[in-house]
Image 1 (tube, rainbow, N blue to C red):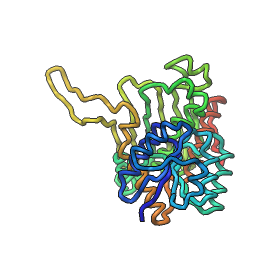
Image 2 (cartoon, helix red, strand yellow):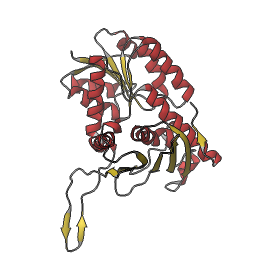
Image 3 (cartoon, rainbow, N blue to C red):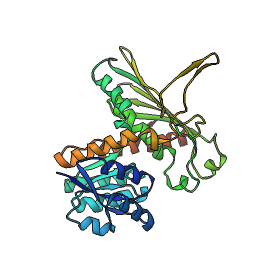
Length: 331
């Protein structure tokens, strides 16, 4: 069985997923839609797909699944639309910026019995997946602390910031999901702080560019997350997990992993410049997993419930910054 896909949104991340779909022998991209006709036409022509409307995709009998890469404020409506149409759904994070809206969306999915997978791609990164495998093998014993560093090389465009949902819902949400993934327990409380150290304009727009959070589970396990929108040295992505018998870590990656030693010292090439190159393998692996979900009626992971859990942590982090107190997760 070849899974036939429609791509909703032909922008930057849509192009990444289009490449992942068409590179997989078990998948075919048959339709593309985008509010910008030129963008849809370009992707459709590149991969031999047709341009179609949202309604045409919902009604099409030759489309098994959709990949949602549209703006965040459309995600929940589109999930419900295509769930009602009986399509399997892969949706970029977040499902929505509001926890209650996500719950309503997930109820529709549950009622229809359709598959919904959320795009927390970092679970599929080869290094992070290997790190998780060491935890599950018991190599480091019981997990006690997770430390995640995630720093972007620069700010997003100013006009994106007001609609992004803020740094915790837009950026740190990936780290919240990774923390849950590695801790192996649900987060109970969040203590967070946010600052504007990169650009005062970010504060004017109601957001932070520098943030940190401490997540704690019921048993006392901790995850410490630090974010910045300014890493002058490249895209900084590191994870360390400390356990009762030792620790395991995944360090930064480079397009070329070499080290040069001279009388001047040790040097290495620059880091990846952003997620488009750093997580190429992860994007391909998550789409491959979604294809297996559709082909074999496999339970999707990360699921809609995972998307809801990460958003609830983000909401609590924002409340913690506002109050200066530790916030219990609203479930």
